[in-house]
Picture 1 (cartoon, rainbow, N blue to C red):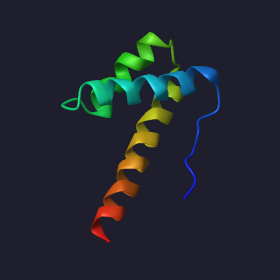
Picture 2: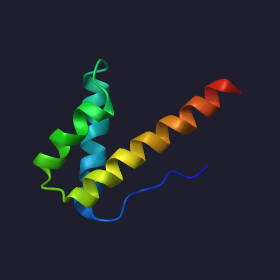
Picture 3: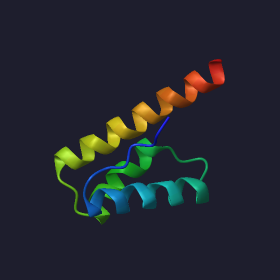
Picture 4: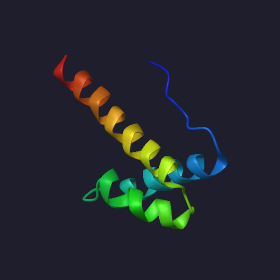
Length: 68
């Protein structure tokens, strides 16, 4: 399955930053990092909602992989 990349430079930077932060801090969750990314990259509420759905959908796909 192809990975969905968000449109817009700010969103791409936010996804990359969140991924890096999650690797450095495995105890954190995307839900912990999204508000920080939103502030850091000056995201709009719509962009922040995209991140929430992006990471929720990604987690859904991960659980389907492990359930198989």
